[in-house]
Image (cartoon, rainbow, N blue to C red; front, top):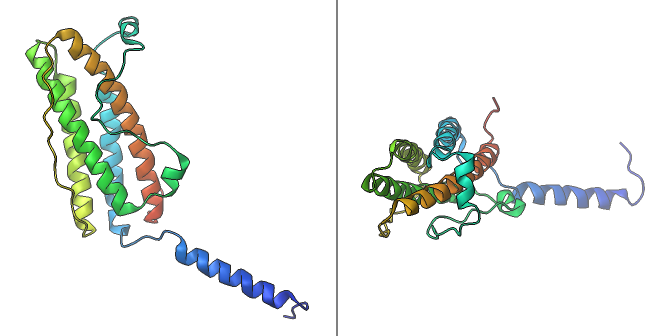
Length: 202
């Protein structure tokens, strides 16, 4: 194949750029064995999302009372939804972050379950949410161990007791909203990790 005069240097330049792009692009760093773990995680998140909608047992009309009420669960993770965040995800760091977030939500859900029992409100859905968070935590821990990554330590900061039934309902509404955001965000993260690990699509 003959090249036009002056095209050879440009072709060489493009080849060098392509090589640089390949080397700098995120690659599956021994994470393909995790492909079988992502689907069970998503299933737990789907179940958790459905359970989250039932945390407060309030009708749409009753929920109006809590519209505009300031969120007070400041210790819960603050979820990032930016495109820049999702495009910069790394498998090991993202799994560690997901595990920390999952543990934080489980700690708060267990705290809310105890508060409901103390004021004689149904805690069945809250206990169900806690069970799904525990299973998700176990899957994330197993994934990190499978990659040979360090599992972040568990932290259990004390949470203040809730004294009134109204406060329990208010926190239940907030927890419901925050959990649903967490579930949707986590599924987007897992979908991105599946692509990074070059997992087969189903």
